[in-house]
Length: 100
Image 1 (tube, rainbow, N blue to C red):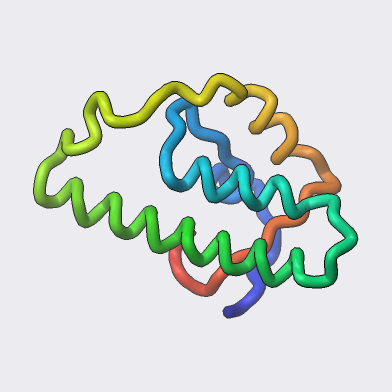
Image 2: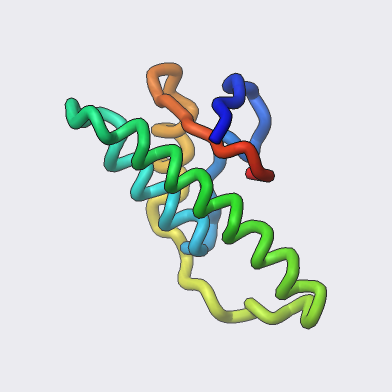
């Protein structure tokens, strides 16, 4: 895995209004932000890798049926709070070398 410099790209500081797989992975990364556990950085890298895989899987599924996920996801009730937390300048993102 390769670190990518933090940018203002919306994919890096993102929150979803629906509770998707990617949103749950981001919430797990949120949990590992402020801990003193030395393994947290590796956990965030793996979660980022999973998010990239989930995004690629979603694109592939949409190739087969464009509305496959219609009515699938519940609403993300804390969307605004998630977004504000992730836009915090102290929030550390870890990235894999694949698409995020």
